[in-house]
Length: 488
Image 1 (cartoon, rainbow, N blue to C red):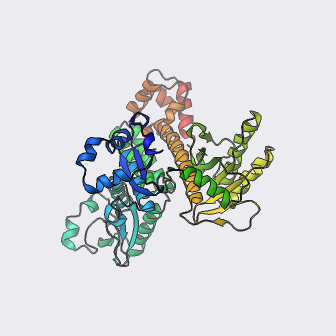
Image 2: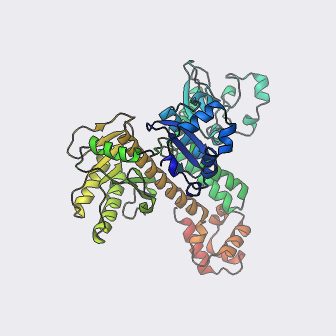
Image 3: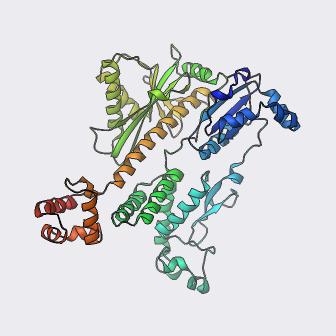
């Protein structure tokens, strides 16, 4: 919007990021705010201009256009602000440096028993560095958990002496596998290191499953503080290391006509006859096929069109098969569009390469959808796959067309993951006992109070349960036994 159109009442009082441009359309300043209305209004108050220093006055007088993006939290605003500053390098911003501002993880393989450590500067010391990670507190808590979970050493010295070993609390509480005492071989220790690095690279399935099992057990035993801690560990693992949890890793903020420019650039890059004013993107989220969901996000004129977002539970695919899941969700969505005679999008994007694209095309043919542009965006090298072309389209990372597709893909990731996470949390909170007809909250508490834990309850037969728990007959007790013997 033009500066002359600025009306404080039209700016939401929410967290977000704002962008100021000069009369040439160039980004000159990017800022974050916990309250966009209050922060942006302050730039145009005569009293502030009067007492501002020369740099601030120059900035204010140079503002010709502005745009903003609302986010959920101040942390997200910080991440988005950082990304935009690095993308645009605005004249009036103090440029942020990753190695100074955010934490890194460091692993030095030259040590006899290497371990993960926090670092702020990426040095030329032949060590491996991971990051940077913007969520510092989450990273610290997660690192502490990983060291204990995999039994890696947490001591400062790479080869502890006898005195250090005597005072090692981690060894005493079994949070360290104690390689310095010979409890494990160097090869066994390095295997633990590699399993830890797999988590850093996004392989969270095994470790999250282990934590989730503990959380459910603590919840059943009414150890709610420990269960809450496990929940926080899972949240932090996904926030820090999750492959797709990158809501603002490549954020795109339309403004100053850039939304229209992105649409036109996309039409040119894909050789489309008409500009793709309405674009939709699909993404799949699941862990080994469990609680599989899909998301659909929509952009209009290069900007998020949240009223047309959709989410889906996968119904027909019961194993980890992203291609089949993509086929199902595209079939369902376009079947409904055609049945209700609603307008079709100008462009469809699926998250993935040739496999996902082929599945989506097969689905469109199956439902009798008229021909329409469809592409696949492969994440690894940001390659755009187009039907009929043997080689993918590769665009410069500064190309607004690619930035728009990345924003669409990242938003689809976020929307799918948030839905998947909600379903997982809901399922975790539900005890297996809740699934038995006739077992309410009071009876569940009686069962756990009588037997002490779900593990002990599983050992009991129907006669023992009926005898020890008032109000539960043998028929209901048998249902409980049968349910507890059924694999989750």
